[in-house]
Length: 231
Image 1 (cartoon, rainbow, N blue to C red):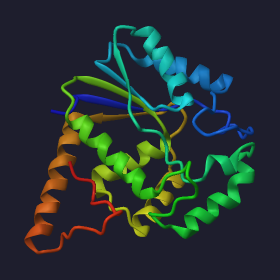
Image 2 (tube, rainbow, N blue to C red; image 1 turned 180 degrees about the vertical axis):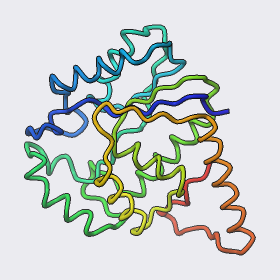
Image 3 (cartoon, rainbow, N blue to C red; image 1 turned 135 degrees about the horizontal axis):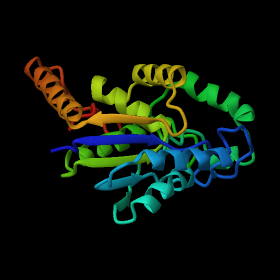
């Protein structure tokens, strides 16, 4: 059974969000506003969570810390729910969001699920694997209340997966990019998912895959590609 209630919480404002130069990708800190936002989220957690899930990136861990301080008995686990690192952090060292814009635009124009920008980045296909893993692990939890603290990119993609499935195709990438840029999750916004919604998504995906099998439309993809998100 999936958790009765799952909160998806985007991290507070980071230095990169504020347009400041950054070093690395996983070690971007929160701003003062981001720390205030994190404390405000912790204030909304009015009962003890059964589990805290946090991204390995610094900005997510710093956002989770006030929740941990308020509920120290809650178990906290680090899961690979970090955002899509589609540009090589080595290439982006010392850049701002404005100076990275040409690289960002070029990546999304390419829209290739298997493209890897550098040895320290990941493909969109690898990102899809992490989304599927997150879904499967959530479904396996025997908890009432779970909070996952991570990133807007990841959570926007995950919510799309719950309704559309996730085939790592150029078309899916384009739809995702439109959704993520057109309706981004705000810093420290909370998205609440019910266990019923997660179970419904699971049943819907299994039904869809079964129908594809019946008409011979579901075929194993070439090595390196990913199947649709399926529980």
